[in-house]
Amino acid sequence: MSLTTYNNVLIPFFMYGTAWKKEATTQLVQQAVAAGFTAIDTANQLIHYQEALVGEALLALAQQGVTRDRLFLQTKFTPTNGQDHRTPYNASANLTTQVTQSFDSSLAHLHTDYLDSYVLHGPYQRQGLGAEDWEVWTAIEGLYRSGKAKMIGISNVTAEQLTQLCARAAVRPMVVQNRCYAALGWDSEVREICRTHGIIYQGFSLLTANRGVFADPAIHTIAQRLGAGLAQVVFRFAIQVGILPLTGTTNTQHMKEDLQAEQLTLTAEDMKVIETIGM
Ligand SMILES: NC(=O)c1ccc[n+]([C@@H]2O[C@H](COP(=O)([O-])OP(=O)(O)OC[C@H]3O[C@@H](n4cnc5c(N)ncnc54)[C@H](OP(=O)(O)O)[C@@H]3O)[C@@H](O)[C@H]2O)c1
Image (cartoon, rainbow, N blue to C red; front, side, top):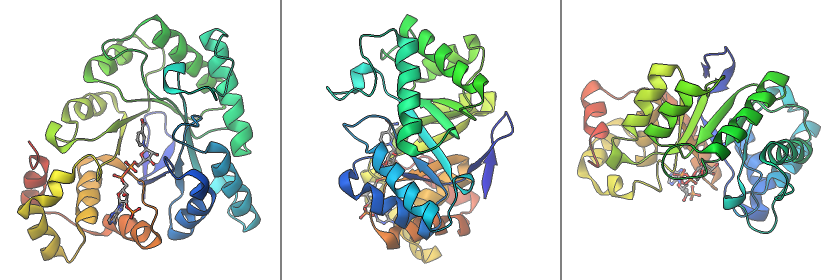
């Protein structure tokens, strides 16, 4: 199953996330693709991701016949405030140059000449958008116009920031990637803005950010009725409510189970219960 962005590009309904996998990244990406994932999320940010090892996995997959066109690759530009000393661009260059250098370095890491999705890892400040954000977004728009990024997006964004971006950007984002807290109605405010502007909302840490949800008897009852795992119920809820989920599992069995969430069906009553579970 795929979703379609407002600029008519297909995006798989579930994404495999590669944060914190360290040297296991190469092996895990191959396992995730073998389990059925076709979309991979990474970032050019060595603190949390090993983008070059994702690239190693892609080389191995290509040898097994899984060619580039069968995969969806998403990576991010991480500003200097999210990097350590291993910044993958010249941190003293202007921001447009930083974006260009980081993008080119991602292409080299991933052994490709285009990205399916290129995401600004986060605005420079917690509230509102500043001059840096506009300069970086304009540079990212340039990559989209060049055809080297098939869609562009922003991550870790507030409702206020997303509203500003949609109002003033020449090209509004096709995707938003946010941590999805059940306590905030699963990020309902940001999701509503995405709905209004035809933006695909990607939710991450659906499991790790919501440990309280797993203690709630209501979700156990739903899982038991469906003969499903708790993680599967959360992922199915996400899919059914219109969220494109990411999973960060390191377990082959969990990879398969997470994808199988697509086959479950939650009733309107189940959806209502889960939608308000942590609030
Ligand atoms: N944009 C950003 O700033 C940002 C920030 C954080 C993350 N992300 C992206 O989102 C991805 C996912 O984040 P995350 O790792 O926090 O997500 P997550 O899937 O909520 O958390 C992963 C944890 O869930 C467990 N898990 C997954 N499926 C399971 C299942 N079926 N049964 C039991 N446990 C299960 C995993 O354990 P096992 O390994 O044992 O399965 C692991 O401990 C990251 O890899 C990254 O690509 C983006």
